[in-house]
Image 1 (cartoon, rainbow, N blue to C red):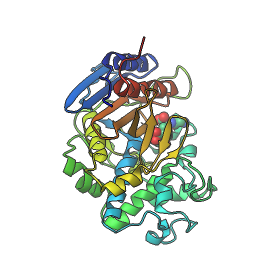
Image 2: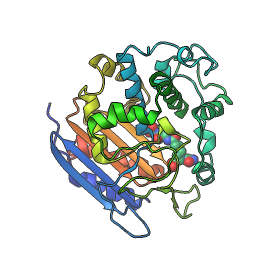
Image 3: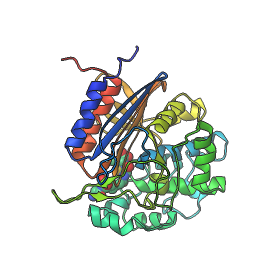
Length: 349
Ligand SMILES: CC1(C)S[C@@H]2[C@H](NC(=O)CCCC[C@H](NC(=O)C[NH3+])C(=O)[O-])C(=O)N2[C@H]1C(=O)[O-]
């Protein structure tokens, strides 16, 4: 059945609410079968008061996980990787359990502890301690292995950034190239994503961007400008920079089967239920909306930036919504309403 028209007034109200709840600015772009909708509210820069634009680049956080998963699924298509092989077959000795497979890692079912839980237990001091640091992938995995596994391999879903750091190690081992090169050659170049970059360990966002502001844990404390950072704590789990246009193109192309074989896309879409509205596949989230529509993509939360980037199953309609703050649960929850406005249309009064 055809989707209802996007509810742009409802989308504007969502962004306005996000700003009222503490985001300096918010943006949303819908690409719907060739027609584009753009909505913004608030500022990209608190000092200059420059209005936020849907053209502004931003840090996409864990939306990066889909980029990493796509590269690995392409390697499966090229018969250079098996999803059900142990990670240790490709990276001998990396993990303490040979039963952990590539599929377990890409579906957050490995049981590998998420080192960021400790790293950011105190949001601002944790961020300031790492914002200029450069980690190796193996240093991040070592941080995780200091803690017990959360579950036996394959036994449960437990979100962990460590999984997609392992994915980055697999990409570099199997392609013989840095993750940056793999993203560029396999995704960014072919799709002409001119606003999309992997600059790690550089701290600057190229070109025109919105600044990002970390909300402190202490109510009323001033926002922290988190724009300049290496994002080395995340890398292949969260360090890509992009734009609303490019993420709409990316998820539409993925779901249209432009980036992997149909068989591999079907593997990405084998979902483990997370809660009543969300399920996780391989580097891909499914969100089930109130109108019965399911959308596919990923969310992102990196210091200073919240992102929702989702598309319909056929890739015909895509939405990217961003708020330039983080560590603000009200804003994260409010921004989820952008999915309802974009894909469920006007709410019955
Ligand atoms: C599951 C999520 C929401 S969290 C996960 C990943 N982001 C992180 O793991 C960053 C955690 C610290 C971010 C920081 N929070 C704190 O410091 C809290 N003490 C903030 O909000 O700026 C990402 O991105 N994912 C989102 C996803 O995949 O949707």
